[in-house]
Image 1 (tube, protein in one colour):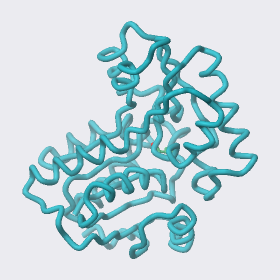
Image 2 (tube, rainbow, N blue to C red):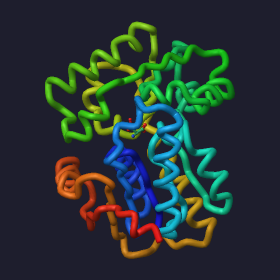
Image 3 (cartoon, rainbow, N blue to C red):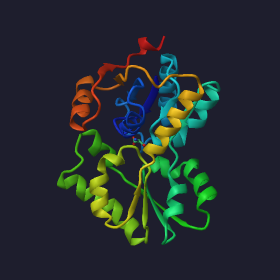
Length: 261
Ligand code: DGL
């Protein structure tokens, strides 16, 4: 069983990528919808709520734990690894490396939350893989909320997407990195706002890494192909999101503190 965790439904972009590779693996998905969005919270706040989610996920016994949230990865991944040194964690790192390999203009746009753009992971990956390139970050306020509301194609969301993409296009970016797992659900709107620009979604690469780690730790990816969704928020809203976004069907439950023990 593989655990996938996000502040909300965005991590389902990674869930879909895992399912595409390993249709038989059991997946436990945790959406921390009592606290979504994470992106404008303080690092201390994000770290505390992400560690609480990690405690619960580790108690469920899934391997690996995929932190399918760029924001939680940027702020709390090192703290999770320090608390659970024997548990394999897979985090989201802004895909600057493949972007640097594909950029001709030398300008890479990174769409992410404010917390991700301020985090050390983006600085490290830029230093390691694109020191000679210009990496322009765009804090995309509001986009997570649209996806959480199941709105991926209305005139309002398209207008919001266009306003966030325009500065990156104006800066000369020819590659856009989706630095938040909610944004692949807005891919059509982003592509329309950035014609001719390459869009990089790291979900398939993260999914491959998750499967690799699962196998390396002796887990089987040939299970029953079941998907168990948990939320700290509203079960009925998550059920509605699963249908609205065309996600794999599964059981949907509230994550309660009692399940931690
Ligand atoms: N999917 C999360 C990410 O990748 C969204 C963060 C948020 O809740 O603001 O960053």
